[in-house]
Image 1 (cartoon, protein in one colour):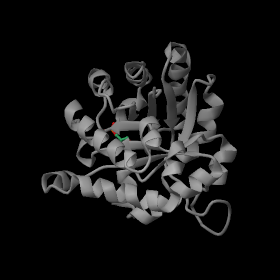
Image 2 (image 1 turned 45 degrees about the vertical axis):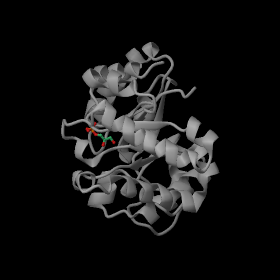
Image 3 (image 1 turned 120 degrees about the horizontal axis):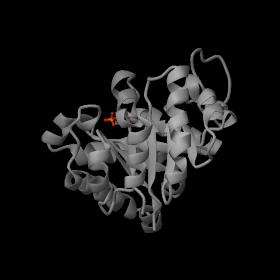
Image 4 (image 1 turned 90 degrees about the horizontal axis):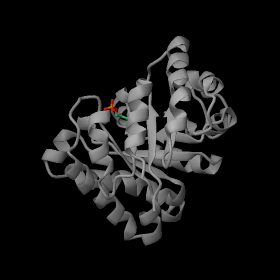
Length: 252
Ligand code: 13P
């Protein structure tokens, strides 16, 4: 039985005042969370402040990206896995479509970052997903396969025991258009079946989150699908009431 996992990706939003207000709201409602793992991923600059503001251990912290270089060095502007570990991060989002599209991250770079995160003892939340054009031109499955294969060929299927996958159709991110529960379930089942060809036990146990315009009003139906194990939440994770409502919708 997989325990659902909901993570909030705050993206590049916030200020100290905003973080304090949001985390205060999460602290006061965290007692309501049962049967679901929850994490929040603030901008790196606010990770430490967020952790200091959190007064509950039912909510973990993750980062939104990290360098390929695992430790320290002359990499101006970067932050490493060992630094995230030192700060207290349990998760790191890798290969988000915004990183791929805006910053040109390749499948090979994402794979390398997954390897580095695993070596540092941080759980990668590996994002995969197709654009609308890729979906409409019938290459959705091959795009997602290539995104997964790059990582699989570098770290091997056994390492996926410690990986979370987030399926995020690019066309559903921040658009208010969500994949229908059936559309999302189809892709989640495809991903799980692909992994099952390599290792049935890993495939059965891996958490596959859905991300893309998840809101309190649509979360329950999405999370009720057999292969959807929670969500990666953008906009709605910036509101404590909405985020907690979404986390509760994932509870088993
Ligand atoms: P939205 O929930 O704002 O659509 O963002 C989804 C996302 O990109 C989470 O990583």
